[in-house]
Length: 147
Image 1: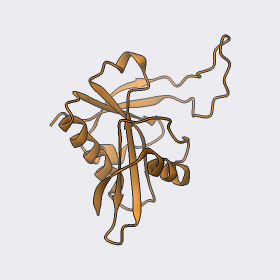
Image 2 (image 1 turned 90 degrees about the vertical axis):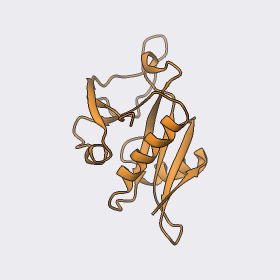
Image 3 (image 1 turned 180 degrees about the vertical axis):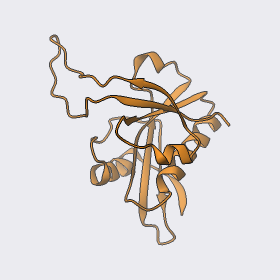
Image 4 (image 1 turned 120 degrees about the vertical axis):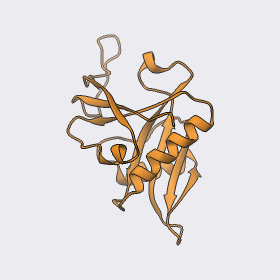
């Protein structure tokens, strides 16, 4: 298996095909994919600015999507590659989120730690009503080790 850079369009195609509860993203800083020797994709990760405004300090990035076709170890390979790329680019912090009900096995395997629990919430408000297309349940915030 090999990690390689992907365009946002390429990564979002894999998100459409494989993500259980999220849609494609609009922007990113970078995206990575994992291919086998036959150049068949088995996973992708999209890294961008943090969704939470309080974390968006210019030195923090967030893995906003990570998808696989179920091939063993691909997700942890992607999380590790995202961590290395993020810190190599000079960023100081990398975070991601999982639903409270998800085990986070791949994140643990890549050395990430749970640092907070956050309440799920709606983006809709009276001044700007929206239809929520994402889960509203509690989430866990994970942080990548800086080494």
